[in-house]
Image 1 (cartoon, rainbow, N blue to C red):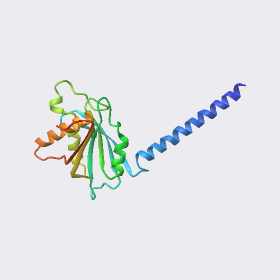
Image 2: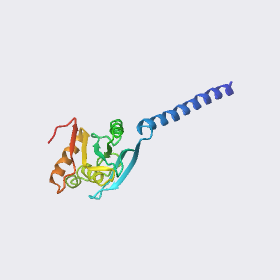
Image 3: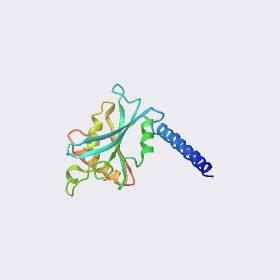
Image 4: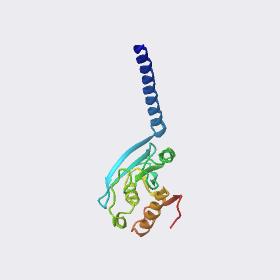
Length: 180
């Protein structure tokens, strides 16, 4: 009786592993639009000395010879860079280079100690500066967007950009937040 039980359990285990593998491959194909969108895991030190984390979605059409518009996107409170990845994949499929950040204090980005917010902000504008320097991004067409607290970060980034010698942000889309 036990050998039959082991064979039945082994069958279900193998079937489950096959389904997991097929699902993983399928999810990868969806996320990368069957390989036409490259996804890079970024970690860098910002000018404020803090480490930031982001996912960068690069469509194959974006090259140094054919730079694409860029979008820096941010999540809501208590979330991370993967919060709305389906939206970011879709934007990349449509030809945008998308940088989805972990704001300071979220995901894999550094935490800020009280009082550092005035100097470091949310990190979104630091990401805009990085995106501006990417050779496959049209530096004249960079937008910012975010949901809830991410929209708040976009608001703060626009304010910071308005004070800059060379403004970098060309557009803003706020989701679930009011403009300031």
